[in-house]
Amino acid sequence: MKYTDERQFAQANTFGKGQPNDAYARYFTGHSFLNPLTKAGECPIAMSNVTFEPGCRNNWHVHHADKGGGQMLICTAGEGWYQEAGKAAQSLAPGMVVYIPAGVRHWHGAKKDSWFAHIAFDVPGENASNEWLEPVTNEEYDRL
Image 1 (cartoon, rainbow, N blue to C red):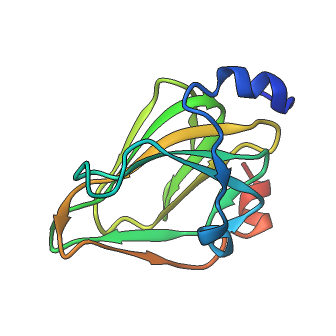
Image 2 (image 1 turned 60 degrees about the vertical axis):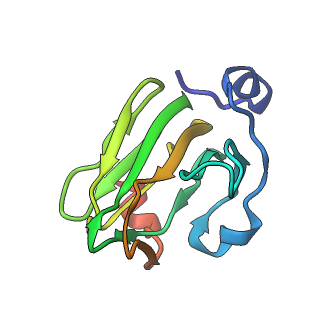
């Protein structure tokens, strides 16, 4: 379900909007928000609810690992997009799960006309790292 009204979206965003995602703002077009769901040092997997305002998306990026690794997205509210380099974008809605293997260049974010939230976590792997790349251009995004 699309949400243009932030108050209505807040009721559907089960895991909460959280705080402005200032630490990673340079890797996003638009505003995103981060609500950590696990505590560092208490859980081996860092999970956060990431909320995107309408039109917000992250830059192209790659999760690297020598073995294992990658990223998981669990869509929880609103509607968004996921795209791997060289492939058509996939529409995202609550209940959908996306597994992104290590080494896959991709981006994800909200649709132009909807708030969007997903739980994101990195899949454990050996020598895992994240490489942020260029922004998704307005031309690329506007074609969706």
